Image (cartoon, rainbow, N blue to C red; front, top):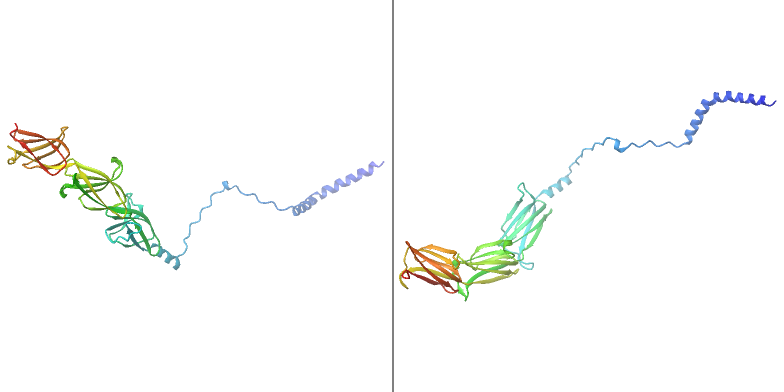
Length: 327
């Protein structure tokens, strides 16, 4: 039969193959490794790695060039300042007050004053940096930022200022004594929003102000003669204004008969028509200024009180006599 030769062949193969398997396997592995490309190494998870410590900053070595630049940017530089009333006007020669502040608040929260001058065109020395410059001319003023750079610096300021001259008279152009007049100037607006600009000015004083509208109060005497007005100040112009009072100067004396001699040591009290006391004084010849209206005057001598009703009309000074013989 043919099965016997086939079985013999199978036995031979079974013996040969196991004997050659380790070597053959090694050779095949080498051949496979030679044919396959190398596998990349696995990348580590960045979240699992400890942070890399930062390298300390190493300052660059100083050189003559860097030293020169540092010295130039830290050294004070010349700054020339000037101011004009209007854009077309000439520089203001004097009467200016310059203040220069740092832009960084100090420990108290205020801007530190670094320079001040009262020259018309000052030149100050400031290190390069940022500043705020305030300049005042009378009561006109302005503030602007200033950047100082290496080299000469110049800056011109435009105040847009005008002037105001005030006076008052009694209706009818009756002059008022200078000593009885004074003026206050406020910013315009509602009464509660006004800010004081100038106080207690004498008549005919020239006040320099920024252009704009202002609320003016004129006081004739110290009682109730008050006039108010809103006035406009134009840049580069002098505004003359006269305010008119409806009031009069009034003097008092206590007499025993009309035109008689004034009695001394009298206590005087003046009341308005609604009973409010607006004036009191001790003497033989007191005087005051009262606005137009009706009043009651009381003259007390010892235990006796004498009175008289009177009316004030705008006009020249007048005298009110109170008679002791009325009662």
